[in-house]
Length: 338
Picture: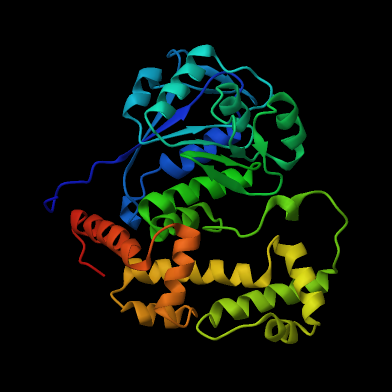
């Protein structure tokens, strides 16, 4: 693409009908509907899709005015379905059929929270793994027994279909979809403007109602240990070493860490290292062995193994995909390369 020509924006379809949640509509709009090209985020073409152009009432005295009908879904690069105020609300038959046709075309489809019920009504989750709010898992299993409901994930991907847990996990999924398609730096820029974390680790198990198993002092101590690890990623870390810094036994530390974050210390550390490596691969020309050293993987081989396991790509291919995208955006905006 020649300098001075804006890249074709990704086309995002927000599918709406009476009963969708205003919060989820707002999340989708905030992530893909705000122009942040001045911060290096690519342009998005977000369209509000419905069966007809009539305004759609939302809870709280709000309304949504569609700007495209279901026919526009043939142009979409990604379709996002909001959650529902009443999770058993039947979606209009034309919406369900349009979603089936979009899936048959291999268009990625994401559902936030109770939006999983809409995809299940369309039959798109039959025989697939899916997640919804932890308080709705039994309801989804009961009404859609062909769906394999995973009780504790924040979001899930199964053959071009994404589902997420409740409320804030919808933000997590939207940012993850941006990160997957446009790179960690674009997702981080959106997250910063929303004053939220670019990603969270763990599962919804940390949010299910249960007695708090540790004191506030323990939580503060663990937060300090996580902050230390993040500022010393290049150093080798063990559970025993981190536990010693927290003044706990390794077993007690691991138990409290899992209760606080929903994941183990080592899994959390790997996630942080992958995120740091993504940023270096996007923003620098550092050799791969140096990226691995700075992010604590130790060797390029180890970093490559973790990228394959968590991102289904290699560090080299990730750099080719996303460093080019970042550089092209900055050329298009008249700014020098980093």
